[in-house]
Image (cartoon, rainbow, N blue to C red; front, side, top):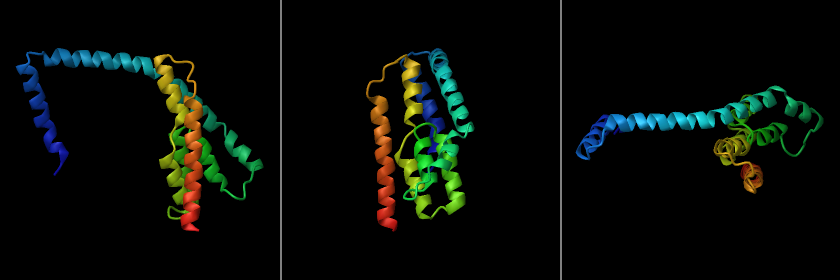
Length: 167
């Protein structure tokens, strides 16, 4: 059973429903497109600025250079790099995870831990700046602190979970 078989009949049903209610479907569609364009024009500058800032930050290799000085023996430095990058950028942390997979393997302890970190944390800074910036909120109160705390808890729990189960 494939859901794509029901898409065309659903569209036909919606058009018939609009006809019965005497609503001009085309005008409603045009109005929805206008609302969508207004929303994009509101969100796009914030999204573009955040994307640019993340690319500059990742391209500067500031974190890689910092980890050359800070060698952690207890926790793998690649996992720490992923834990730091995840709240900033999902694509950058995904790139770190891919590097971990290539270096250690997908089924290794570090690879599994990296997968759990990727799944249990969120791009907190990116999401907060995008959503709050698009609606014009400048004071996020506790949202950023709480989001980063939850990311830290997700990071620590993933490390503990994997090391307790796998080792």
